[in-house]
Image (cartoon, rainbow, N blue to C red):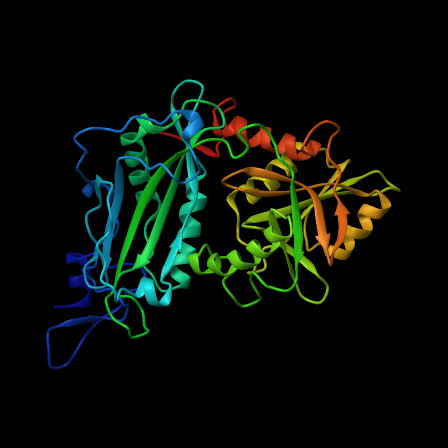
Amino acid sequence: MSLRLLSRQKKLAPGHLFLRTRTSQNYFSTSRLSWAAAQLDASRLNVQKVSKAKDLPPPEQLVFGKSFTDHILSIEWDAESGWAAPQIKPYGPLALDPAAVVFHYAFECFEGMKAFKDIDGDIRLFRPDRNMARLNSSSERICLPTFDSEEMIKLLKEYVKLEKNLIPDKKGYSLYLRPTMIGIDAGLGVGTPKKALLYVIASPVGPYYPTGFKAVRLEATDYAVRAWPGGVGNKKLGANYAPCILPQQQAASRGFQQNLWLFGPEGNITEVGTMNAFFVFKDSTTGKKELATAPLDGTILEGVTRDSILELARERLNPNEWKISERYCTIHEVAEAAKKGELVEAFGAGTAAIVSPIKEISYHNEPIYVPLQEGKETGQLTETVANWISEIQYGIIDHPYCQKI
């Protein structure tokens, strides 16, 4: 059988090469997947519904990540056969071997994204293409399988449609989605996983600040490091989060809500808690303002909210009055700007809160005060940015960032 004939009989995945030995008619793939490996295919979805759907809890009872919907979206993968048929089935515990590699070697990555009910009662996903691209990037970095993003978005839409009764219809409320990929091989050897599970669970959530913005106090942290050059700080891995809890507890014991992560002898500001950090400066000579956030150099998480803020700011802020920068700010620069009256405001940005205003930073026990609007717990641009994104998410304005289901 010729290579040309074989390729006609079975479509080859990109990057796969098949060889025939002199002594056998068997064909072997140079890829870790065989030629028969199935790709993720939304058309193969099987749905098993619960017999009785849950009621949406009262809004005041919604605590972030504590209530879950009726179903789980689940797709198994193995190196020989590829992706199995996707399943939506009743929510419940996973059955995993105690030797599963996810428990021992942290083969795990995840995403955080939201579905919103707009003013017309339609459901919208906010930039799911960016979340799926990042999940693929994270998965590839830890030798877990990748998938067709468009097929996965189709599955997400079917899943969200099934759970639409648990999406709150009030502004500030949404359905939080948590796609997760784990290695599930049973064995204590360290190597590339041959089996994986991709699943999605969902949680109805309320506003991050139920009574309005609450500006936070941060401890500038240089006694612990969140990420470093050549590492995986730009991937959404569970292993990046657990080591940050102890420094957060230590900061909390001193009265601070989060860490402002510093890196290097210059004191470069990288992130704030689990969010991207933004600072607004004003040149006292020219009056021009600058919105600055750390560059994507491999140590910074490529935040979907971060990217959205930068794109919208470049589109909507007057370039004669504003400069939008992706550069490192140092803690010393921020302290000096505050002394000179050139620090205008600061905030963190992420999926959960959209933006989180900052009112104070402590560096080596010295406070740096960040201005807020009079009578408000937020800066002016922070409030504006929150409104920009909220209007898109809830369909108040049509924008290509949202995909309607």
